Amino acid sequence: MLFLPSDAPIPSHGQPLLRSFFGAQMIDQWVADGASTMVVELHQDYIVRVTNDYLVAEATLEIPPGDAVTLQAATYRLYRGLFNLLHTHPSYNLTRIWNFVPQINLPIPPPAEHADMYQHFNAGRHQAFQECFGNNRQGWTPPAASGMGSADQRLHLTLFATTAKPIFIENRLQTPAAHYSYRYGRTPPLFARGAFVTLDDTPTFLASGTAAIRGEDSCLPDDAEGQLTMALDNLLTLVSAENLLPQGVPCSFKARDIRLLRLYYRHAHDHDKLQRLVQPLTRHRANITLINTAICRPELLAEVEAVFSII
Image 1 (cartoon, rainbow, N blue to C red):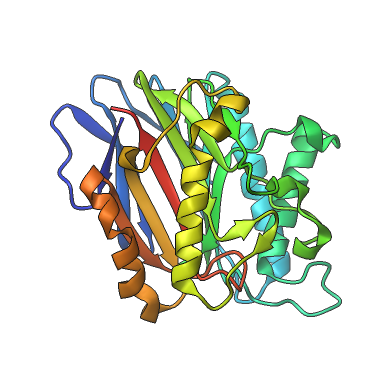
Image 2 (tube, rainbow, N blue to C red):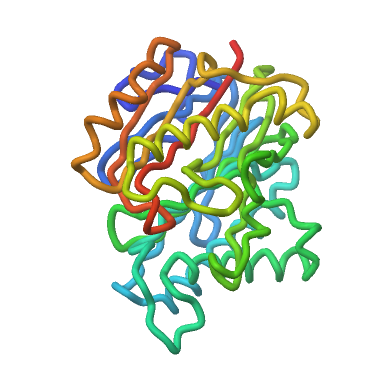
């Protein structure tokens, strides 16, 4: 698997498996081995691309402005469709999901059951997990994931599955998201902090969206640079030997192993100073994309996600 920036040409031996967009902006490209046949399928709301080793599916639903009820129902529908899709492809293991949620921080006044659009999204996702996997949350295995504001009024989901078996990882500095208190909603967000998986015989780590959170608390309010510095520290702690070995991963990763990094930032005026903070990572062949959008908690100003691989 190759992880390429948006402007990189596709090698003659490769075929595009995943081209990620934020609105009209291409973010990056995941390229599979061209020797493997790719099949394109339609499953309810999803466009699906399947190779011998990988499955990628994308779905988009339009949400009326401020309509939290429709967002919750649409989230439930897409996640149920996702689980149904994987049921028809039992050889593939769900590994990573990207969620782009319209008006993600918009407050929803009483008598709504949930406080904002993101919490309504979480409720729809939680309902789908509960119906598919039962009431015992301990038996659920949420994948690595990100939850960001979308570029428009569309709810957009992208999933990545592989025939390899992922190991889902938590961060020793952070409370597992599924265990968050009611401060962050009646139904918690469901995701692992990352996933270790072997792709094309290469040890790879897919880090979820990672922000300036310790325990379950957001840190360093009104300090975008401080938040990004803490987020990067959390990211490197996540892939450290001290964090991975006790969770059954036989290797660890360093900053030099980052292949792709996405930096989401809330305020346009923070772009240049945040870009300067991550620029040193390009010394190690990291391809970096900055995306100006809302983040799941209103107080968070920056968030990162990354792909690590040992070459």
